[in-house]
Length: 240
Image 1: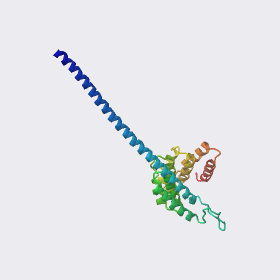
Image 2: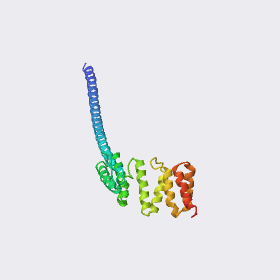
Image 3: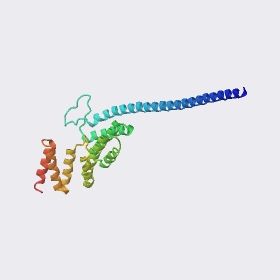
Image 4: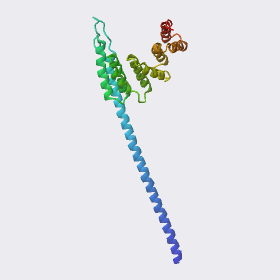
């Protein structure tokens, strides 16, 4: 009888231990699941909070950029030409560039991580170029080299090449243009880059310039760039 009870008790203890271990396992899994859910909630809350903030910042930046671009695109009036009511206009292009640069640089500084903010920085650099502040313009364009917007980076590189050309640094402009010609950029099309490159090479390597002009005429017939290439060949013919 005692042996029977002992076995019965032993069986009962094992059942109890199984239940206790099972309860502990369930409790442990429940805690892990709760922590996982809490982490997910925190992550999603943070993500959507950031997204809402980012969307709001982008919308504000776009509105500020639109206002600044009204100055950038303001018409230049001829002497004696009246301005239209409610329309921003200028008689001095330099003054327009100066006013636009102030507004655009403010947008870029306030919203640097947004697409409108980066675009504002690009147009700010264009205004600085118009004002012959080429060193400042180049510094602003360098800030656009990094980032996910490859098209804006290509535009910045193209303007940097133009700055290098304007300052007599053709050795810097040429490699930039060569790289751009193979970049596949939509906003900085290959024929435009090749035309600019050929224009620089006319002074240092007329044979390559001629080859580029011929390539443009062959690859892009019946276009404005082909007409420009034809004119470039005409100017080079007597020298070659």
